[in-house]
Image 1 (tube, rainbow, N blue to C red):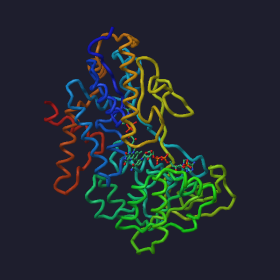
Image 2: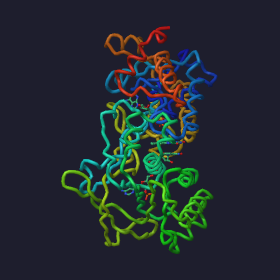
Image 3: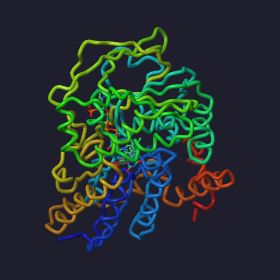
Image 4: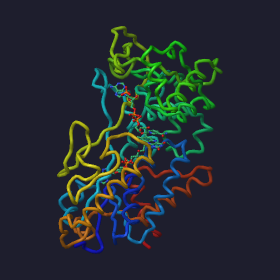
Length: 446
Ligand SMILES: Cc1cc2nc3c(=O)[nH]c(=O)nc-3n(C[C@H](O)[C@H](O)[C@H](O)COP(=O)(O)OP(=O)(O)OC[C@H]3O[C@@H](n4cnc5c(N)ncnc54)[C@H](O)[C@@H]3O)c2cc1C
Ligand SMILES: NC(=O)c1ccc[n+]([C@@H]2O[C@H](COP(=O)([O-])OP(=O)(O)OC[C@H]3O[C@@H](n4cnc5c(N)ncnc54)[C@H](OP(=O)(O)O)[C@@H]3O)[C@@H](O)[C@H]2O)c1
């Protein structure tokens, strides 16, 4: 028998969480969804990952707002599962719990010097310039002439592009003021993006590669020799999807361009891996080894080169972190699941389900697949019975101050109002104190 309404807790309010909530609320079963989020703000990486110069992509949040307007939807921000409420408590209060907590940390390179001051995870830089309240105490020294970005994914391109934006380009974004000031005042002349494999194997996508060529303040430099492909890469390119061929077309265009003496340059370099980050007190240089491709893998040749640089960003992927009491696979750094089902009553979606890859839209299909299993289990009477009580009571008894959706709307209104006179979409509140104070503002008491 189905308890009516079915009560589902979704943990994590990024794309996967919102798409899961939308799919649950669209079902023909009567369902109430509580979306639990550790930050006072929703949208996950749409707010705190997607680059500030990509406002059109951030506009996907409008779809999430529609979901939030559903009468059976509630938002509990500033509530961290594992800290404020346990997994066991959630499973007893809800018929089903669906984790969509993303991949909260970075992968490391495992090379000497990685911990030197000036060697950063891209995750940290991205969270900082996007106003994540856990990262605002960081200070990035951008005074050196060369920054090195390790990795050939779209996040590496985001980091390179953000470092290359002009004051005019930054001025109309919601990049934090601290980051705008630091980037505008940076001494950086060259941003070297280093891929361990070749241009055909790069993980980035054509729109992102193409927009490098449109930057007002940076030339894009590609060595034509790097585009001379070996036989295996030629064969791979011939069989590759059109996106890879478009990437290569962009790179060929860059390789044929004469530099326009713009203030900064983004130099794309391939078949090179970092072997050490060098410096006494802080980063002074990076040692790269030349690779060759063997069966599609990067294999070091032994030929090394030391390149002076002031800062290094490691952009080699994100990874999930375990939640107390929730199964976790250390190897894949995900919650073990079948199609999103962990056990009847516990589910997952998004990056914590399949690993840190895929664009925002990928999470829609992924979350919908998971929700189908929730509904299947509900209809089959497989969900363990829930107990008496509610999340609000539990949080109140514990003195946890949840930020409800009205509280977020109050933050949103304040941020948009601050941005409006400057032609910016918003000026983000980026400290916990500011965010919680805005959430408590009178309009959120409605
Ligand atoms: C830097 C960057 C830029 C990107 N840019 C683009 C882009 O331009 N276009 C595009 O299509 N895709 C982009 N992506 C990919 C896209 O952001 C992801 O596919 C998507 O965000 C993954 O969704 P998710 O819901 O699984 O995770 P997330 O978006 O990370 O959401 C997870 C949420 O869970 C919350 N959470 C974590 N732990 C807990 C806990 N214990 N309790 C409560 N809440 C918790 C987090 O605070 C977060 O809000 C980008 C990714 C990155 C990293
Ligand atoms: N605008 C957008 O649409 C946008 C923007 C940002 C992010 N995203 C999406 O978000 C997801 C995550 O992006 P991401 O850039 O973090 O990850 P990603 O696409 O997986 O790219 C990771 C890069 O790091 C490299 N790498 C991994 N380990 C390495 C090592 N030890 N040494 C050197 N290089 C190493 C990988 O090379 P190998 O291929 O050799 O492993 C790859 O080039 C992707 O799906 C991406 O498309 C989209």
